[in-house]
Image (tube, rainbow, N blue to C red; front, side, top):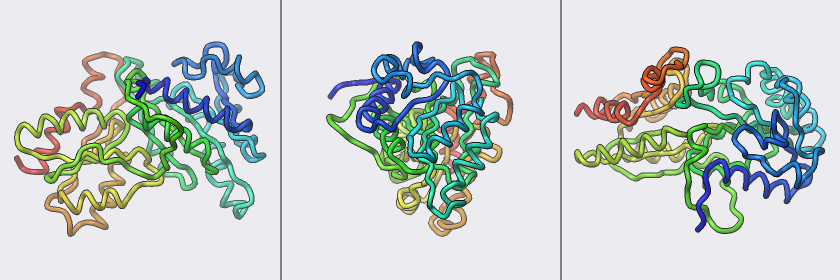
Length: 325
């Protein structure tokens, strides 16, 4: 097996899909000559030309709206926001047009569009470049939301997202781009809506996604030294949510910690916690516990930023609180 970083894995997945389907295009700022700020589309302009690698002005609203229209006409745009924090100026074409078009036309018009967006703190990028904004998208019916934690998953999921006939928000943590992983041989696609049990255990379930999966695994290894057996579920896809995987794990461990990097208030961890409490209450031996980012603007200061988002020690403390250890 070959090893690829997450940025190279996403690049490989996009490249394969552009070779497979001439209707797939990439759209965004610095996508051509620079190959985007993280080098993901480097060389695409030479390979596919300016009609399929569209370098845009700094105007997220206009090129996102343009891509919605193109998708309605049968093109499959893969749109990149340089940072998810810039999504605010493009929310109307996403939440009122792309998300609702299939329903509003009675299924006559689809919007097969992917919106890629780097997320997350840890690079000292301060308040306007460091957020995890998953709840903005999971709240809106009609959008699918993906947040991979490994290069192999990122490649398989980006290919599934490109092929999907609905708009998909594809969230990539910036501090995962350099992480390397062994890649499966040959063609593979990971279906949207399928979680992955990355570590089996019997005492408590940790449910999480994106970079926090790495922290959850680290916490689980530390807790194992104390005799606490932790199961870790990587959701991979937030919408559609793999409820069956959650149900099976909760029914086995009877204790749950949900971990997210983003702000605790109104976060997706709260949504998962509520669903578990409503539908699996009789399976629980303790209340569901959330570990999440602080409700503050992401700081620039390195020590303050490190305190802003959860780390393995925070997860360990959450597990011990649930188990009353």
